[in-house]
Image (cartoon, rainbow, N blue to C red):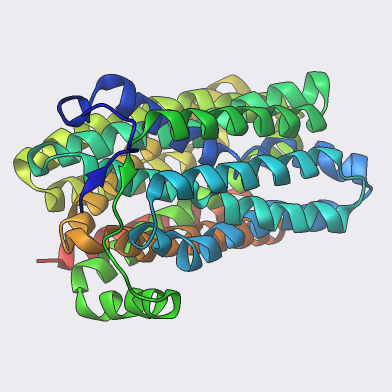
Length: 400
């Protein structure tokens, strides 16, 4: 895919992978995807303020994840057909608007609708990652994608820290309003800081979407990557969707404490550049297998919390968070390296197929984790996470 520039731009090819530009991509991905997770640590506050039950409030993150999966399938392929810079800026404007609507709503059904729309618009993160892959030469693609994915995962994890603290001290509306402002500023920065991208596909929209399914049938490696990463995402979401409730029920801790575990998990984001470098040198298959194994082992550690004191249990959860976030991030970078190499002219559509699997897994994990916690308690959530991560490992071990 060719990268072109606005008519009044100077020739920018030598600095196309400048640190500032990669940093902009990483920041944009992080701010966009953070919008999906602000609600999780403050579900209790939302339920109390809007007068809904604990079970009903779980629809907020579930609809957000479903909106994201739907947006990846229906909107992300447009990156192969449109100028990615314009697409990212347009989605940033829409995301800022619906986040502001979330901050202003006083009715639960309106919050559910805006949550679905947040998911749809936040797919701009999945336009940013293929943009990084396009700008990167093949020998550095794993490293560059890994750096951008560090920003994305930091957004996922630190969003919980920020929203938990802000919601407890200043109210949940400030969380959404601040997110709207940050996304709007990011959209302006992307418009000014990125080059134009020449579309790789000229097909009509219906043909473009149909081609996603054709790519799915054509590439077994894509199917394995989507299934494997989707299972890891199921485990990840089951944990984070239930942690705040478990901490409140067992230890009487509030949203700040639940969000603070994102700091421990954020350490796992450091795996992305390392995983990218190893994937460039040793191949992504080995990285994916090690990452899935580490994820399963880290979730299994949570079985040991039964006989521990409260402080020791907090340490155990923090260590497990570092381990499984590291493993999941390493595996994701490896899968992206595999997928982006299948067809250079279809990276947005390949990314759409991969991340549809990821966020279907996220949505399923939130629903199944909440059900497991309500029926059988915290260890049922742990068992679900271990089973899903182990299944992901088996898929990778069976790959060529």
